[in-house]
Amino acid sequence: WRRLSTKGHAPQSVIGQDSAQVLGQSYPRDDFTNVTPKILEKVGRNLHNQSHHPLWLIKERIKAHFYSLLIPPGHPSRKRGDNYYLNRTTMLRAHTSAHQTDLVRSGLDAFLLAGDVYRRDEIDASHYPVFHQMEGVRLFSNRQLFSRVQNGGELSLFERGGRRSPEKQETHTLEAVKLVEFDLKRTLTQLVSYLFGADLEIRWVDCYFPFTHPSFEMEVRFQGDWMEVLGCGVMEQELLNSAGAGDKLGWAFGLGLERLAMVLYSIPDIRLFWSQDERFLKQFRVQDIHQPVCFQTLSKYPPLHNDISFWLPNGKESEAGRESFTENDFYELVRSIGGDLVEKVSLVDNFTHPKTGRRSHCYRIIYRHMERTLTQQEVQRVHQQIEQAAESELGVQGRF
Ligand code: FA5
Ligand code: MG
Picture 1: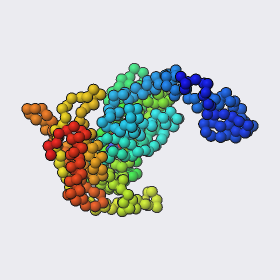
Picture 2: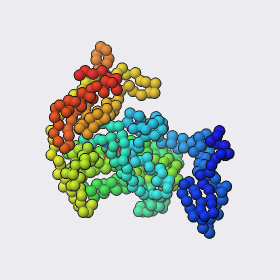
Picture 3: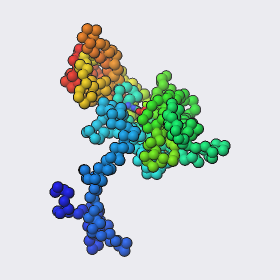
Picture 4: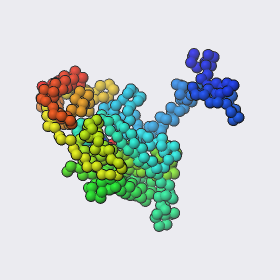
């Protein structure tokens, strides 16, 4: 009650003879000044942030309504096992799509943004728990989409009573979606041929994302295998509606900057991006960003591998619905102890005892330093720490 009473509420913002003090900043008075002390008293109160104030309450309800439209609380993209949480309400962002709505709401209809993103994920040469994504969005009005089509004026973006199908969302017309999808794929194909030349082999794979439908992933040929470099699709109309762009259709993509740089510069391992070794960094200091870089890979030092086997804890689910053991928990533990010495962890055996029903996992950990040769002893020390921590922190029983 003390906090809510106005008595004793020292206003943070006041107006004096020469200047107004507003939230710690000073603004000199001039002939335009007309603000009054009564008004300034209110600045900084932020009623909508005051817990259980009616404005707070209605705001929270509106937020809950829109948030639940697209990513319900139990959605996999919020899973504790796949993400890093600061606490119950705040996580490190796991993809740059988190910013789509705000930027569309701000009025932009085409934008790019880049940022660092964080995920608990598997461990190998193309996965790292911190990486960088670049997001692109483009919106189309009816006129923009159909102006290139003969008699396009008769076509529309939306239809009533339509159904969601593998090709399209319920409110979209098939002709509009096909044009957006075509523009999206053409734009991304042009991007990769600009970066890599027309020779790069690519393919499109259908997939699922919560913010787009239909959705696709682009894969490129890298060192003899297909590697996924980006996800994309036709934006969910609910997202555009809630961001004030309900009269438009849009596409969006999110690409992994590391993955593209690995292909472009033949960088063999994702850990190298964090290297502070001049032999790595100096190769990219070109005069002109378009100048090709012929990356000379640092000589590869020999790998050492060690296996680790353990019985999993009994498969009861805890009351929070959390599984008692997940593979990501083990990967995370290996990372936090082995750091960048660990090149890859793979599950090589998954065994269920025929009588007791107990499950056991065997993982192979490949250790390799990017900048020098590791010794057996050094690796042994780290490996033993991993064994001990697995028992004490994950509740597994070692078969070491
Ligand atoms: C997404 O993150 C979607 N938000 C992309 C998107 C944006 C779809 C807009 C539709 C519309 P995905 O989880 O597939 O999708 O990640 C996108 C890209 O990030 C991947 O293709 C890959 O290039 C890169 N990436 C994903 N995980 C890792 C990782 N652990 N390490 C390095 N790069 C990664
Ligand atoms: Mg993906």
